[in-house]
Length: 227
Image (tube, rainbow, N blue to C red; front, side, top):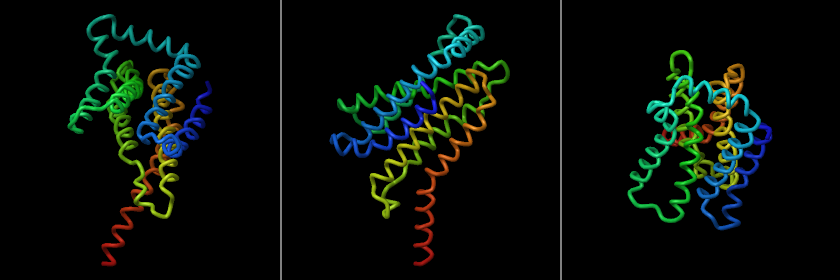
């Protein structure tokens, strides 16, 4: 599986999510979470485990050399699972009620998604030098920004809601996959010469996602200044 082809497919499929939601009368959140789950599953199986098989095996060997079989190894290895469980528990506590069948479905898919998103951070803690805490924090911050910067269609009334949703979800899916791959290549597979270019792409996408929010701020300021 070529990663560029996967990104193109992700952009197309996620962009279709609003119309799939309407056509099949399924909540958009369910459609999008299912799409991201499928894309990350394909990326993990087709790209990480097959295309980068030798790099992945070498990373695993280095990981167990750094963390010999012990309690520390289990803690490090399953830290993405612990972080994902804590994140989902916090989410449901904030909601304040037990999930229904649909909620449990989304929860299970989100758990897999979060685990795979946090997986590349194992490469950060496995570095031979000082652990790059700034890179770890930056990775988490970017993902938080991605989730919190979804376009509010009400702020762009001159564009049909479906088109703003399609553009946002398409870009979000590409950013999620590309940032994950960038950290894998740099910290797990030690191909640091690719990180800068990939991060430029990710940051450029985030700027695009932020434009509607900026437009909203400008509109509100104009309305305030004009009384």
